[in-house]
Length: 421
Image (cartoon, rainbow, N blue to C red; front, side):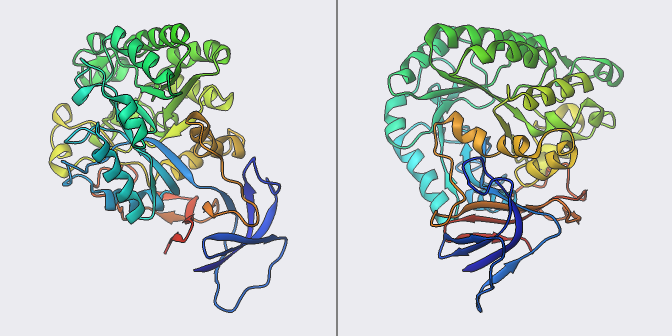
């Protein structure tokens, strides 16, 4: 397919056209030309908008996937469609499927499925065998088969010795451990943020110290091992404040945050809305503002969708019995833009969705230059539309039916092209 993108502001720090409004010609999966004004070839499609922007394809860390084992929630085909609709060209799914992703064949299956569905899947391998937190998985075998990093997803590692040994192991091949801080002995049966709203609703709360305790430990382990570590999906002011001080001293320590924790608070559950029953929990406005500040000063390297598809049976129950998780890969970028584009510089905000994640994993940042393969996300910040239909296999996205001013207009990965209808 041949495409002309008209008058799009390019947002790409590696491009000589960064922050310039240009016409872009895509042909045979490559960037054919970039000029102030281009003639339109006879067979080319034209993409126009009121306030178009062109950046490199988005990349999501820790996407939850249902295949294999939970296809009733999400298949790889539906996940890839949803990801492309959200502007993503790369996803890094967690290993929490059945069977657990911990062998060469498991990894190759995911990588191949990505190719079949026009998306690059860079799978995360298991941190511990079967995710049980007892024995370290076979890291080097998985690394050799294409594992981008190692994690047990949102299952925190309670065994500090195991986590330390894992950090030392991956250091031998410059790998990375992805760990979500959540001390379950402190969280216990908490299901929402511990505070005024949890007390009002009569729900057990999750204290911020449950996250902070693990963040403190993880910083110490990373410092001791001098290995690469991503502290994944923080949610609290206390964690953000500590990392603001500590991260600048450590070039091998990285931080991510779920988009919902940047734009929403526990007020969303005042009416027991199960679509906002997520992990990590949504906290108070003070926490949200601290996370935004940490993103603004680039303590936070990446914003993640925390996409967690849950079938109807898991959500259409009373709040205490509902499963945790919200679909989000289609709305993570546009919802974050909706709330934060006037509060954080546009290129800083966008970078947390594409360049930041790539730098964590030492991946090359694509250049928006003539002759390069096209790996692009095109969005319009003045395209009012209502999010009515999800490509995901589950309908637990809290933004279904909501109207946005930002829209993903196209996602391009080589010859694979998604165009919004």
